[in-house]
Length: 571
Image (cartoon, rainbow, N blue to C red; front, side):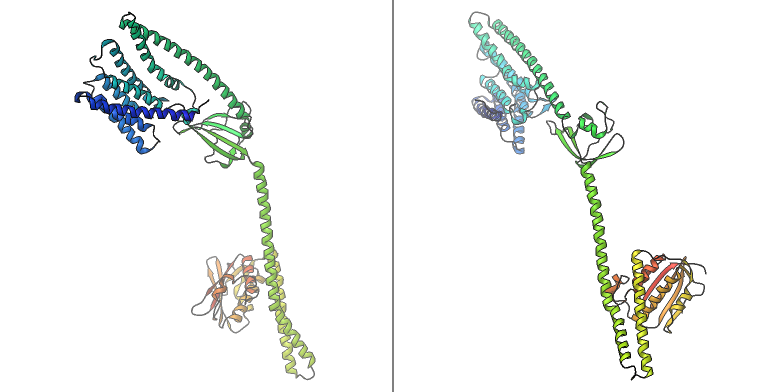
């Protein structure tokens, strides 16, 4: 029946806990039965046993701190008795320090091992003379203290068994082998002493028998240990070679690019796919310095030796050492160039679809606005012309000449209005298609303003030498629309003001009406703005086509002001 390593570890810690309890109990009994001068070493056994018992309990900060303090207390109590009981005091002091250093490693070796071994050797050395020299040799410890120390040493070894799950996969080494042999090393002197005692009873001198038996057993033990270590190292070497060959084969056979680095990000090894991905030859040295290592993984651009980059999906795994510090890194790269190209193609198609949808939405909005305008603005003059023409035709003979002239004049006025709407629509289509071009030349502002301001309600405040660099036809349409808008929706007087601002000129059209409602300010120059038809929309586009700007601002206490800014030009 095979016992799992985890169960062996539990059994080992259970035995260590029982040993700690036994040592503490023996310390209490020995201290109670000893005279005050002899209590020092025995009293140290109590905190030592408690420390061993706490070391095998589930890990916790409070438990570990109490165990450390108990072990140090045992070492201090042992040190205080060095003068009276040097053997017992030194052994208890070493045992206490060993328990305090139980989880400390120095260069992969546990610091507690030599301390515990020293305490056991001192205890054994103290027991051997009692076999040969009598029950009360001077300067040595009592059998209870020596036995307790041996039990304490054995429990300390079992408190951290190598069969714990976190140690099962650790590679074998000299420190681990010596630790496994530590119980045998502790038992050899005891066996040697017993053999020497038997030899002494057969007639051989006790010292000679002890020395001879101990030397023989020690030599045999050293030879066996040397042979065992040689065989172990040989099998370990073969196992490591097999593992390295398997790991190399596995690394080179992977379809993903893999790079192994040490803790300082120096390249340890790369596989065949990594060389293909970065443009390295099969035996070519790594030419990427420092080697690329993505910090967090994810989509990443991997550099190649020719200076180009290839998109990859990168992942980084950290290989920790026994203390949890990074020992090495394994970076894996998957070529996602095809996926990126597909994403870019899809993104371009999505962009084209969005632009097409935007154009369709704009066209639909234009159609709806145009339909609304035609239904309202165009239908009104057509309806008026039809009704007036029908009235004129039906009652021609009965109507006096002045009424006939008035009706004909109204028909002509609505016809001119309709013609202007058609011209505006034609200009609107040309603006939407971008076919409107400005033929810029110096245009006197006073001349254009005089032509547009035919009403007496319009005052001109423009100097004769003020001119703008613009298309004359465009500027005429702009001024006419602004004046018409001011007369239709504002109140007289309407002022046209021309001003020079450095290398720019400003033409201001200002009325005294109520101004623009606040809710319409955001769309004042938009297409089909309610209450202004196409006028302000066309004005804005014509001004911008001539490199100028137009803006609106209210006038206090009443009025509206449209400001057209164009480049200045000499007349």
